[in-house]
Image 1: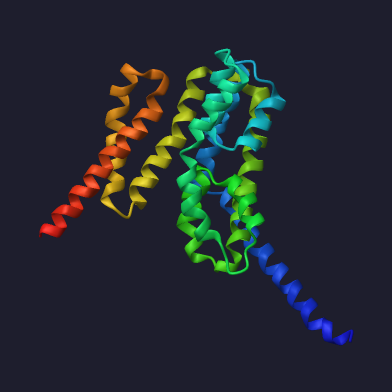
Image 2: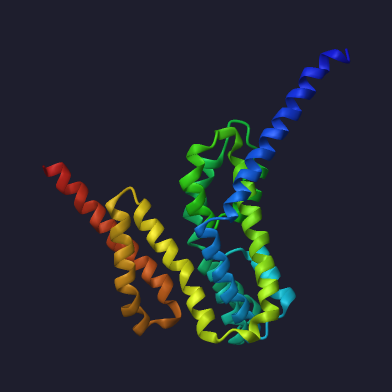
Length: 253
């Protein structure tokens, strides 16, 4: 009876080794241009947190728990602006709504034949802009039953590394001029913008991006408090009109 269980134990060990290998493969992406850009952006965040009176413990907790740089910036703005707890929570939630379609698109790509829902639920925490772009580009080259291990390596390593970056830079923030922090902040949205443009599979994505970029300055002049939300709604509506027009044109031709 003991011998009959040996092959099963060996198979489990081999499976564990394979998963660990894919986990480390995902973790190795910390040495890449997107990951380095994200780390430089968190250097800027550490300076912003320090300048606004956010403690080291609070800043590192925000990075690890929220894991969305724009949401963290919104939260610091709410804190410095004297928002109530409810108001700050609503502001952060609204800024993070943009991640919902990313999660909806990414989870099916990550799900394997035997993937547990709890694993997908936990890994969804790490789906943010950089991890999403990197994952969508590389998951198609990973065996489906190893994709959760691969993304776990990517997501966990990105989160822990940037949390550590914020902790280190927080102590050194007095040595950096404010303009440096502002420039570093700008790198992440620029990377995401160029990556999304290059990886777009449909022209409607380009239309949505251009309409958002053109509409935002206009909307900001009239409703600065709700500019991002209104820009998303207006840009999305314009893109839907474009999609319907293209479909109608194709049907007529």
